[in-house]
Image (cartoon, rainbow, N blue to C red; front, side, top):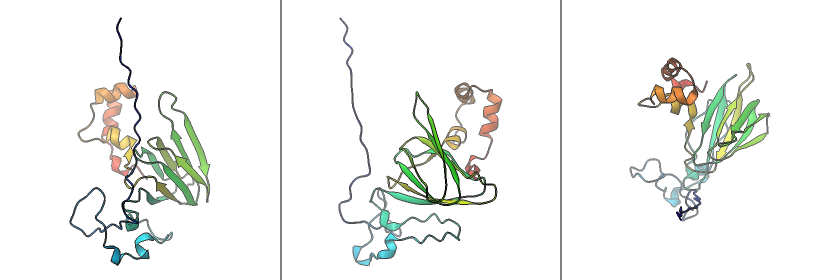
Length: 203
């Protein structure tokens, strides 16, 4: 008789545990490591763990230095009227989103084969969780008012793959034969999609 071996394994991955109380990022260090070099603890102060809301100012992308090596990250997201954070995934993190101002329509899709779509309309103060690795989005349905949210993620480096950018904006481009078959459309449609400026699709 023929025996086919069966294998079963489970992979559990997360950011490594810190070896000290904290490792505030020294962003001026020329040394390159997986993360950032630690600032001398003698020069650490409360501002290294703080970021003012400044909701009346445009979003800044600078990170909180004190989060370095702690296995989490946080981001403020500003949505223009009818603006969106298009369908994307974080391969290394779960996201929890809290609405600070306005209204957001949010949702995620479960993995194959079900591809179940779960969505909700969030108002100020509401919270929603996006499980690790699943495709999700946020959209501001109000044509007149902006929205603001805070996203916390369970990794220092969650990674972001914006679906349309990855599929239609890859460099070099994925073969239009492959994409036409995958999306069941004409190659001309794929060629048109690949010609778009995918860096600007967050508006």
